Length: 538
Image (cartoon, rainbow, N blue to C red; front, side, top):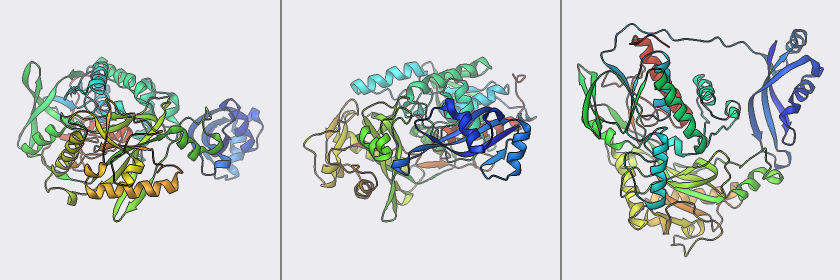
């Protein structure tokens, strides 16, 4: 019989090869009664620095008699495991009047297209950027020279913005599709531990291969993926989308469309404008902006892990911090252990920063965004008011960086003193192509600068050294989430245009790789339940 056992304490020094014996000891049974053990969740408990350990949940196969005796004891840590039946969606009966089109090949679009392809819908996927290998080359050129490709960059291209990130897979969603997302990623090459780690990550280096493998599977199943294909228009008749216009190097093409899954990502500002002009309903929403803070990873490790800092089983330590500045939240965002700050603009004459880590997380610095909440009351009214707010801030960073891809940067000490730093000390800025020492108070809106200053001071009380004088701040981080929401109903369709399914982070309904993938799957399921596939399901 299979049981789940929770809250098993495992010393950091103890390897998983001893796990069967530890489970038997916890359960009070002979080790021979435990036939197999599989970890389903591993979390690090570092609340007491003198007792850092793992907390595990496992499934264990026990002999029936032993399992029944354990269940009879009503131990809160032990519960039976029911086999999860395989489910298959029931396809609809309505014939689509044109192609099923997915726009964007980030997590939402990728998982939507994958599910549609599995059920035989042969989706047409439009991606304005490049295949991931060519995209990586263009991004590297931008980091080295400042030469930006506005259609293939950190924001646009196969894999979406998450491809150049830490590849975090944590999600607040309790949706069971989350497990399916992780299982799918593992099947296409992600590390197996993401299926049970409490804070899983892939790393940008491994994520590229995973998304490429998923795209090839979509194509194998009958889907069509077009790169360098920009959605430049939509047409509707009777309140329903009927066709899309696609612009490529060969010109424009109009394609009949039965359903349009819009997963464009939050950088597609020209698409937002096109949709607004076409009468698609959208509304402004809150987001956050700020800067990237860099500290020595070794300092963060010591602060979080104590004497076990640097232990090979623990890896680079993370943090999550929050405070208030008046009525506004100030918090760390997208923390990248052992990573680097990267240039992430998608439009010329603007500077945007983000963070990225490889799977090993072995770079010298830790970095995270320190951001302040922005509400629609802070910017001009209208659906695109938040976009304009972002652009003005990114333009200010561009000018402060010397009208180049260089980013304005400061030390924490100089920032708190409201002055321009004379140079950088023990923490070297990792941003490429380079930084310009700057008084960031002259770049940021006053309420943002004040919030960051309050946050740094508060966080210095939570993590020793966080407000150290030579820590580095690089600006500006503006793309924490979409500044608007493309309005949709409970059926996931646009409230103003039937057949249009706004999904993922760019539509304002997700915040990370897993939640975006879940949202894409939900939209694909809605299409499957309504339409009949044009080809027999594979």
